Image (tube, rainbow, N blue to C red; front, top):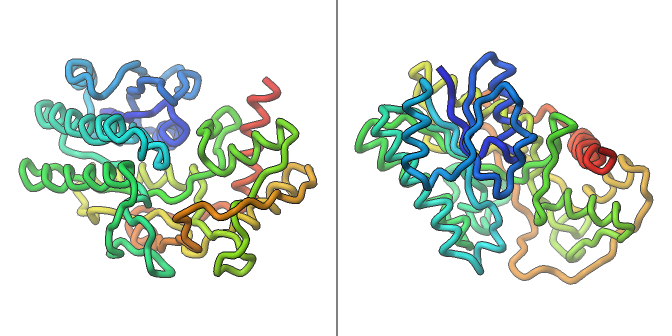
Length: 322
């Protein structure tokens, strides 16, 4: 039997597919390639190009393949842009999830691992975010992810769906040189694109209540994240109970200033970041505990900050040099 990975041609989804393969578990990928890349999917993995909004397409996949469960990574992931595109965000993240869950129920597929987000917390008022920290999303994206969790919860009550949601924080790095983060909004790609274009990367604000005055965020390596998806799927398949949601966090975080220093060291490109004004609404620090995930999902920080930067840079350079 195989696990269906929605969004499996994207940066995170493609790492999840490879993590399953490394454990000898077959996968099937569906992706509309709106932000994913066909080349990110191994040639020996069945691939369906299309949207999970297409119920008939999903129905065909469930009919053609023996699907043990779903890892649902597909979605519209740009929190800032979602403010100006709320209807698109809800369609891609809420309506699409509803369609997926309906087709799963019709096909008697009873397990799902959901890609959620730290955005469900909004701007937390605590130094260390736990799963019980109040949810207060501040964008349509964050709201759509929280609604996704509610859909799983309610479907669990209604039809016995076995589920868990993994709340990502800042996913970085690469496990394979051919898999790079191509988001135009994430910090690492923004820094790398500036350096490649001969521009100086910029820090937004240096007067935060942190050790070096720059924002502290929780950065986790994409390969570590992918491993916990496999652990979650395996436990669900084995009939083990899981928490409704898990934070995949580092417990300590890193500042934007520290990221810039690490990038200069790894790339060998010496630069002093430009200093810009604070961005409205940016909190001083967002860091999460990964204790529950460590207990249940083999979650661990296996990579240092230098590992994260160097692997991401290698992947980005592989694109440039190709």
